[in-house]
Image 1 (cartoon, helix red, strand yellow):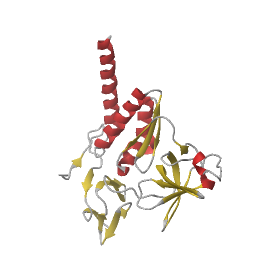
Image 2 (image 1 turned 120 degrees about the horizontal axis):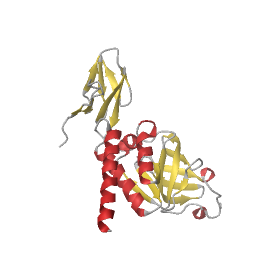
Image 3 (image 1 turned 90 degrees about the horizontal axis):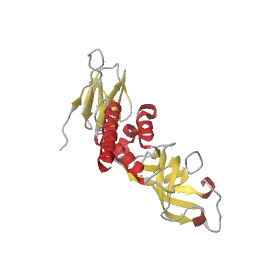
Image 4 (image 1 turned 135 degrees about the vertical axis):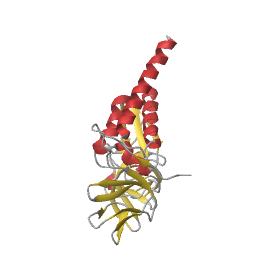
Length: 247
């Protein structure tokens, strides 16, 4: 059972920062005409009401919800990781975890395409990092052209709730850069919740996975980046201690 919680954090002077509350759809977050509705909120009279289950985030006058559950809803420009389900005469059908069919046209491939055999480029079962090019009523168009896009080879792929991706990335990439540095891994985070980890060895990749899962489990906590830093330090010390004892 999920209960409503309230997280607080004090700054250096001892004053409380803005609180983040877990809210449910239909719940009033704040009242007042001075507030503006942001993502996953709407105005009802003088009230700003939640449209999703998640954390209510107040940035000045703007009120928005950081979702903590739900299906991935694609947006133009999202980088996602998909699996090739089928090959057509002019492209590939991918599963990106969205409620609509997703299509990667041959002209949007990241490498040379043999029109007589598209499987030479991407075959059924291949994992590809792609970007949402456009969203239509009948489906989603993708592109594999761009930096860090294309067929995924090596490393490992893990899956998290897509609504927790913003917490894993952090403000201006602070969280994911922290994990990259501490794990020595290259990490591609798909907005659909699939994450590609590639390190020097499996041990580094498993450490990165463990750090990401820590973040997702504590996603509702305020000051998460600092708590993750502390956790990483403890894990590193524990690892060094184990190596020392083995010797």
